[in-house]
Image (cartoon, rainbow, N blue to C red; front, side, top):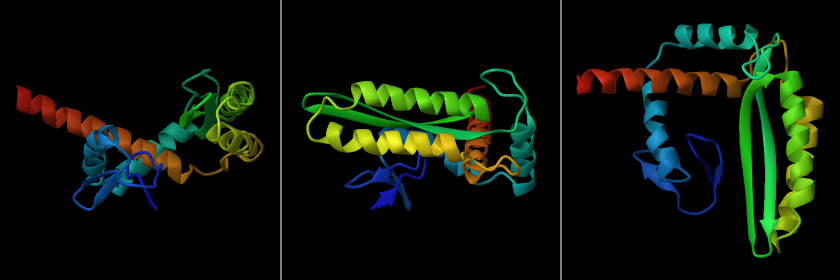
Length: 168
């Protein structure tokens, strides 16, 4: 079992390959171009941006940081159809906990209604949300997940700049 280079999701079967990189689907592969561009950005530049985001204001509520990645986990089901998703949010601790508990409530209400995956994934996602709300990232240092998202954002900006120059 591998992991998607872009989103980090587990790739059980298949996936899409681009050279030595493995992605969960074509959309992540397309976004993976930003990953390749991000690998060219110097570590000092990435570290400076990570510190800036971590110490900055929450993009959701405007409150003071530290800002980091808080991942919410949701599942919903309808008889034979079950869908689950992991949503990373770059927000302050308060907004992150609120979103995680909201995702747990959503899953509790709408996750159980599918067989068999709704019955299996609902408790898993609820436990992940509650554990994330209780634990959360260390407020003293930026997480690796925040660094990855900042790096991807910088890579996407660099890629957009290159594409804009080519179009001109």
